[in-house]
Length: 146
Length: 256
Image (cartoon, rainbow over all chains, first blue to last red; front, side, top):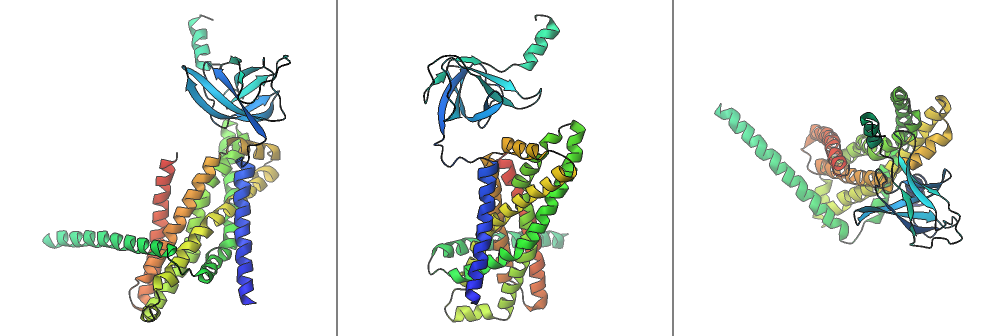
């Protein structure tokens, strides 16, 4: 009976610990064990200022995916995004880099298009809009070229 | 003058030799982890001792750490008008820093000291010599179960600490200070990355190794008499705590 007690107690402890770890990583950090529910599309930006892996991708303010990877291709930023499978994106959709608030984090906003043709897995959004460069804008304003 | 220099020199040599001795002890013990026969029953007992019995104190400390963090960070963040960041601030500081460190320090005080005292008393009552005389390897019976149990129990305790701390922060931030529950958790999800959790995990595992290593070493090579054991126990706790904080800085600096 004593032996059973010990094993049971340790089992409870280990289970509790693993549950907590699972809660932290899956629920809070959104560790994607199976990325079945997502497909990847790409977009090329002139400037990807502030976009990092894990940044949100939104349509109409609703998060539909995350940024998977940011890399350089032909001196332009190539951003790969995983998008939820149930969200279809038209060929003429526009991807733009936006900021939440003035000093908030950067995210990618997709404005849906009107085309019948959809972007398939690995496809590319052609219309993009780079991040608004606040400093550049400010300097333009100050030096009067705006 | 000559005496002083001689003293400093011999002290330095003593410290270096001690470090070497400790390291050899660690390497030997780690080797025995992988050499059968394994003492699973002893391992289970040690997990129970380090893990289960620390649970209550971890829950208590976790709750209050989360609550205090919420209180203090709320005060600070309000000055910048960004109370919405309370959730991620609590979660990040808990998961990356406070969870592993506070858990390790607590368990050092609770279990590490007990391990040192236990092994130390076995040494001075010559039970370790008896084990050796019976051709049983004392490292395998006394040290290895402690190290493996700590490696298993520390990350789990830390994870429990983190979750409880986050909900403790929720209690104060949302129920007391009137933040919305949605903001608290959704902002947390926005800013928390899997990397943060990995760092917490690395930290807690290495702390487990440090604490069990130092505690076992200090007990294993205790000096004789009741005084010797008490001295070893104190040294084990102090050295473990200091090493935890130093190591914590280095891991933090590497994975910034």
